[in-house]
Length: 478
Image 1 (cartoon, rainbow, N blue to C red):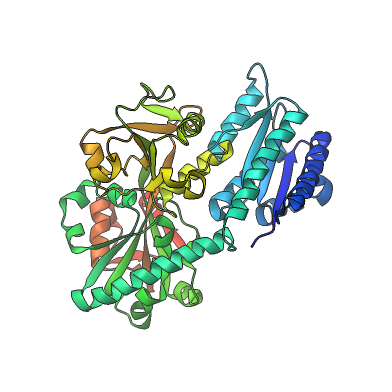
Image 2 (spheres, rainbow, N blue to C red):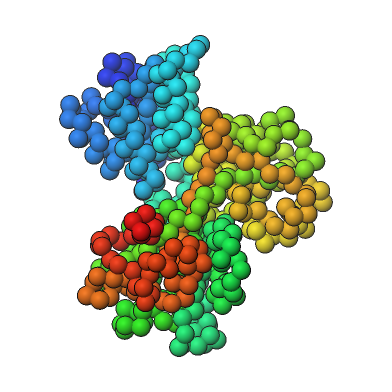
């Protein structure tokens, strides 16, 4: 079990007293937690520990920090801004460090304060936490750090990355058993498209007129799994061993990952033969669109936070969840590892709200877009579904039993999660092209006819050796 949380305090160097108070706070919390029998310790660092080299700060933030606390009084300096953007990029790529922004309260919003708001909205997808004085800052930092400690103690002994890997391995094992059966049922001579991933991504795909009007999905097999479990299927040893041994370019089953999140290179390399995979293939990605986070609330349920509104901010959503926690309203979320749930948690975390079974108990349940109305309504019990534009229990929504409320940032812009389609392109023609099955070519043309001018004889030109190559570049360069 992870027994420590590494924290970096960022902000103007003149805020020395703030850093000293927070360092003392961490020491006091460690002493208190030892007396309570808690094993988690807080290790807090700032520029005072790392010297005067900005490169050392950046390396610490990117590679060692679990959490970065940004303390801002009235404006954000260039160095702090750069550290903020660096941490944000690292979080989107690896899930760490988590970021908390503490901004001193002001009676009027200056241009500098608006700049901070814009920066947080663009790079953190959350909101800052206001504090009135040093004592209030300590109180609010302590509250967030205690939540981090409780969350870590409530988890298993695995690290977050290992837990995700375990989730993937478990789901992949189940899928492998299904594949063995499918081999016997479908046959070995033709390419069968295997759509693996989240329902919101599949629903987004079918919004394309060419796909909707074709019989492509009738011939494909759809295996619904959470987004984070769909990526490794592309590079799974079992699915690709036939393709890697021969030159038939992925005959039999050809997996396509439908993802409600953007993947990183590492997401496709969670297996022992990754060198073999990358020597033979690249992962081709296509951005299908954006999916707006949307909650669906039973129509006759009244609450002053949502009454008469078609959209609410993340701050209002957090207040709404606090309002209904412990009441008889049922809360429905998508599966663990899904892009939708991952995004909700990311935006609610800065407000100290956690929509998980461990926090909300039996009040929270799972739903899918195929969940029947009888499983949601439950004797007219009020409910809320944490879904998206493309993902809701269809039978419930079509019956008119609930109303949609989109989620926005504080500036009113909608919060969206990207929808991607990933598949393997096999190196051919002395490494100058990617080969894909004819059925994949057909699908791409149904999504965008322009691909007909780019893909020749089921081949795309190969101009780099990255693990993930986004096909948007072909459209932009055409």
